[in-house]
Length: 264
Image (cartoon, rainbow, N blue to C red; front, side):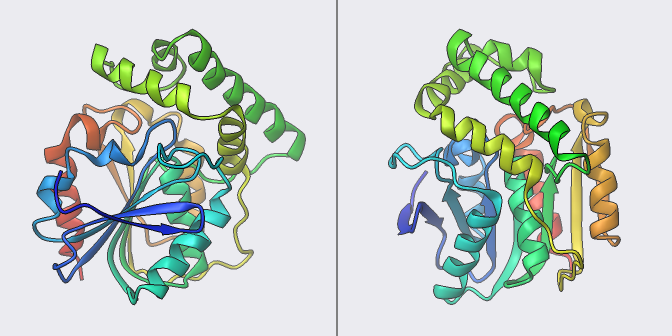
């Protein structure tokens, strides 16, 4: 990767590539990875787009901060974009936890977003509070087990792609880096972040991507997005698991981003 520049914004470091390009693409990574989750797609996309990739708090190897929350991160990123004169985003992409941030930013409607992609994004549970607590505890224990017992446990717990030895080493490194507080706040926030009672967004082209291996797991999220953003287009991504497109099939990822960026 080349042309790297980073800017600290409160609790986030923002990495930028291809600043000379006119169109802006924001990429927001999922949980249990770092911002270099997009390592394989940056060289292709920076040739055409100004890439903005935040290193989310709790997952930034250059910062010891813990994860804050979906609402806080969406607000910080919006303020950074506005403060840096970026008032028109060609494509806002987020995967899983990153998709939660995209969902909240669309609802905030503080930044003009031409196109948005929610890739397996997690939406707030529409369940009683006590049940959401039990789910958060279950998710926390699953990830904590991976932190203690090895990243291979994550494959059994979630609809992920098969991991190579290198992938397992990377996941283990991230798990060693992140704190128990970050793990807890990640799942508690992703499952329960707030959304306005009345949602209005000026973004006219929204896509929700569902990996083939996670269709069942995303049913409630799809139903929520259909209600919150009725004009959303839904797309099934074949031959990948949850969060597997950018790291395991970067060519398909780049084609998808470019196709969405051409939408008017």
